[in-house]
Length: 237
Ligand code: ADP
Ligand code: UDP
Image (cartoon, rainbow, N blue to C red; front, side, top):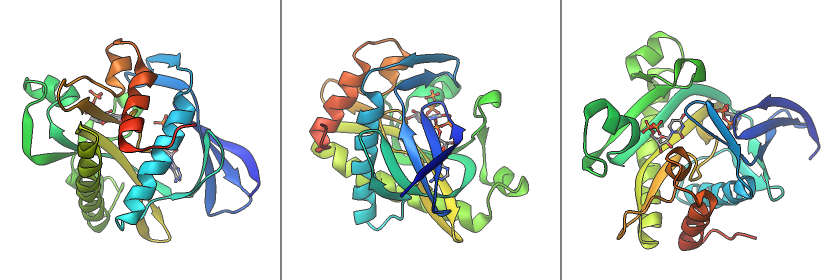
């Protein structure tokens, strides 16, 4: 597999073409951003930790019958993936209230959400990723009803698989964000699953072990990610 030119440099990953038009290489960088790119810092080991974390989780999801873009981990910080036509909609499931939901409705952080809620956001940094709904996504041509329905179903299935996985490590999966794309007419899970895009708390102490450590300047950000990785069995180098 030949790595070719840089296609896109995102806030946390760089996307490269390959000599196969159906495959891309994602490179996980140490860049860490918050507040839609307003604050950016380099955190040593983050690229490698997230690459290994993501590879482990994507393989667990595949084993559970969820189709993902993951093909193969190529190096410490690179992964080979299927090239998807990305849908600019972020799918969020919340098991407990946190983040923007707490700000929007004045809820208490940690309040259980029963059943878990499902929200959509338009992926647009300039607009601050505004909340949207399925109707708007269809009207604006971002996805069809059938695609949105598949995305919702898959996001809840991911929640079931990952809640069980984190629970075994005495961890709470508070919320998470997924991105999907289209590959030969099928809806496939893309992007990444890592502590950058979810909230994970220790079940007993409620200690935050995810990107909120960075957003809230709590320190030991990557140490938190590594703690989660260790507890769920991600092989770190
Ligand atoms: P951002 O674009 O939010 O700054 P990243 O730094 O993570 O995010 O950049 C990775 C980019 O690659 C994102 O725009 C994401 O939607 C896109 N992407 C992720 N997986 C795939 C894939 N399999 N095929 C095509 N694009 C992808
Ligand atoms: N999230 C993300 N990327 C985004 C927005 C949110 O990965 O651009 C994740 C975030 O880490 C959290 C979940 O989606 O796990 C819900 O985020 P929320 O709406 O609470 O927004 P936040 O307060 O994190 O900006």
